Length: 334
Image (cartoon, rainbow, N blue to C red):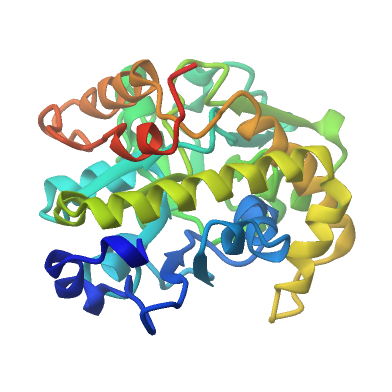
C-alpha cells in the first residue's frame, strides 16, 4: 500500500491506518471483542510468527473487556478493524454505525445455555418459569431471538423466563441464582466444571445444534473506508496473514496457547485453561478460509429478524458484508 497511498487514504489517517514514513509498514489497529485469550489466538500468532510483517503490516492488537464495545471504538477512530459478533454488528449498523463484515474466521458458534441437571430441564420449553443468566452489551441478541422463536416471553411469569443480567462469570449457576446461565464452549463452561460441578451433572443447549446460532467473531470495518483501494489492499493482506495465523494455531495448539499467554499483560490466564480453550476454539474456526458464506449470513439475519415485537434488527440490512477484501486476498467461498 506504500506505493498506492492516495489522498483518500490520507484523510483516513485519523482512524489509525496510515504510514509512519514513505518506507514504513502499513499500520493497522485491531480491536478485539474481549480480553486476551485463545479466542483470538490467530491474531496473536500472526503477529508473533511474523505473518503480518511478511505482508508489510505493523499490527497493533487492542484487548477488549467488559466496558469496551468494538463498534464504539471503531466509530470513534480508535481502530481500523474490529472483532465482533454479527448480531451486535448488525444492530450497531441499524443504529447508524456503518459496520461491514470483510471476513469471517469463525465458522461455527460456541454459545450455549448451561443448566444444572437437578432442575429437570431437558428441553427448551422447560425454560418456562425459570431464571436464566444472559450476557448483555450486544451478546443478548442471539438469546432474545431464540426465545422469540420459541414464543417464550422474557419478562418473567410462569409461562415466560426471568432474565438476569449475567456478569462475565458463572456465579449465578454456582450460587443457585439461576437455573441456567450463558456459557461458551471454550470458556465459561469449563469454569463451571473447574468450580466442582462434574459434566454429568450439567445439561447444555448448544445454539449451533438447535439451529439458532448466529455468526460470531467476524472482522468488521467502516463502510466508508472500503471506497479506498489502498485500504482494501491493506485489509486483504491483513486477512491473508490472519488466516495463516489461525491455520498455524490449529496445527500447533499448544504453541498457540503459549503465544496467547505471553501476550496477556494481566497474568489472569492459566496455561491449562488456555490450552483447553485453544482446542475448543479450533473446532469453531475449522472449515473457514476467512470468506463469509452468504448462506450463513442470511441465516443469521433471519434469526435476528424473528424477534416478535422487539426484534434485534427491524429490516434486512443492505451492504452489511462484502467479499471485496477476501477476493483481493485471492480467497473464494468454499
